[in-house]
Image 1 (cartoon, rainbow, N blue to C red):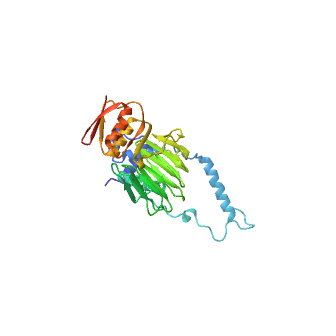
Image 2 (cartoon, helix red, strand yellow; image 1 turned 30 degrees about the vertical axis):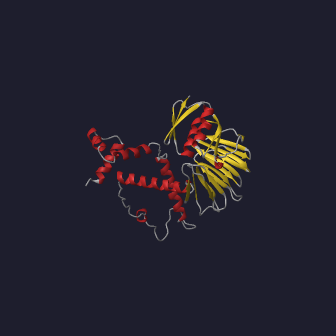
Image 3 (tube, rainbow, N blue to C red; image 1 turned 90 degrees about the horizontal axis):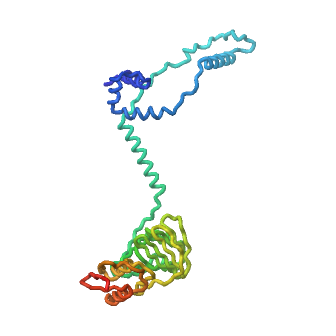
Length: 338
């Protein structure tokens, strides 16, 4: 076993810069050398308090004189002593016990840091994690529309390939749900009703509104009452009144406009106003369960609609305004320029 005294002497000489090249190489081979270097680096900013040998001696003499005057009886000269001599200084002091130096091994140090970090992460998780939990999930498939009654009587109508999740147990005190897709909401009056999406939030008290949340887009159309739309980071908010709409695109709030049309998908029609063609084709895929392919399909935005109950009619309703032709093969529709 390594001699502790020799080890401490070696470290002291290293700090004083008195090691020979061979001794320095041997020290660098130690497993805890990196830790020792960190300790030394941390000590560089520390300074010892100023010390004056003569000043300290004068302060000690003053304290001794003050103590001597306290033991002098009234009328007694300072150099006189009481009948019982005071014990000597050496008798008053207890024997000094040498405290062995405990060495910090690298593994113990790392484990201690790891434990502290783990505790910190757990504490931050408990403090900052305010994510809601959901115990009810309702989803629709291709071409499916579904009306859902929430615990308070509020009604949600889901468009095709859409999903909502909420906590049925907490609903009376915490009316919030998560939407992925598109839905029409008829929220009953009561506590704040919150619709969370990956693209932003919508908060209301009691009203009728439609929320579209797919890709990087959230669109809110209010048909009754008023709602508040919020971007994902909560840095932008917009009050949307009946007959108005607002959009959040890639996290940025777009200028609010008048409601150019009311959603009609729940009545069997998909309606578009200056929509990208890709969005029209995607909606057709969701409503009919088809695959749309084609070349050079990009073009001017589409304004129009298509029905949900007749594929051939729907294809004509979008292909003619777009100046396209199409072919149907099984579940695939190929569009091409005429």
